[in-house]
Length: 468
Image 1 (tube, helix red, strand yellow):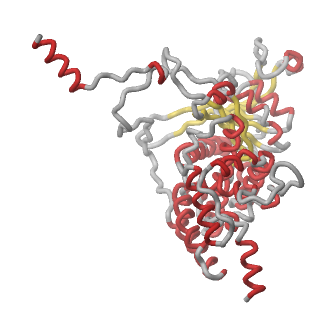
Image 2 (tube, one colour):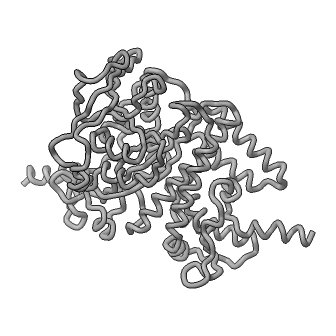
């Protein structure tokens, strides 16, 4: 038993208590966070880079889990393995997160996205070409001076009370829902400018699907220079009286360049753009029972109507709308809407950790869809996350490899049985019924704020005035 026990304990000592490394070994390799020969991350520590990275991911997979819970896990693991006891303070863990290699996290994001993309069920949609979707959102940061300098606050009405806001533009894989790349800026940076800086994540032959904010002449021209096709709603009217008719509400028309130079390219680059370019304009109608008929106009550079029928292009845009729910999964389910780190550098790492956690869950969902012949869109993100959190505890306690494999198969089967219900025609209003609190809003800086006099105090003062 001596040699067998040593072989078993050696890899176990590198794991965290949740053993996330063993579950996602196929997605993120331990070699992404090597031990350096000198300076940072060169000594043998309790909080090694791999252990800190997976503890960071565990916090993201357990929303609202503070650093104290991660430290308690390391303490429990130290006692379990008869190692040097870890301190109960969170300072060492927070310093380890600061030392965490951002380059390694960038590589982990890319590796997890590629793993989810390769595992997703294959289809021949749009001739099997890679389809990517772009979208943007705003996140709230902790109200610290360091964050305010890089990400200015949004004024709340006429007051200076507010939180730093960070704009994030992400590039999705339309097949798997994994996040391929991201770029951040402050509230003064436009989404189009950030998207142009993400062009390195595109390859010739890709198809990009975007919403109305990106559908303009400049974006179509820039993507054509890269050999990338584009599908988007137009942010301006295109003259459909000219050109060639390709089918019902499908037309090939010339799109003329505007007179105002674009803000996302230099004047020299703007002057080199053609005076007009041919695009395809498709008018589609979305008909749902109980809803008003909605018509949308799509502009695309997929000009061949025989190879790319209009219904496929409309379907691609509808699938992009469904993919917007990935941002809702991040902001609501993983609670990424309000990042908690105090400095811009740590905010970037916290954002990367959330995106990697999202991709790992997407990788697990893709495995369920492929092994159980289910549609990936009907596999629940929240259900997958909840099931994985509970089953991971049982798998970590499995006494044999056979029992752990049996638990993993049971996990996949449970996820496949907990599908999202099909609810055609369901109205999802952007309104809340339950009020979170009854306290007044903070309309001034906290140092200058005076609380409102309570009702019983007002009545007491009123009785005193009437008595006098």
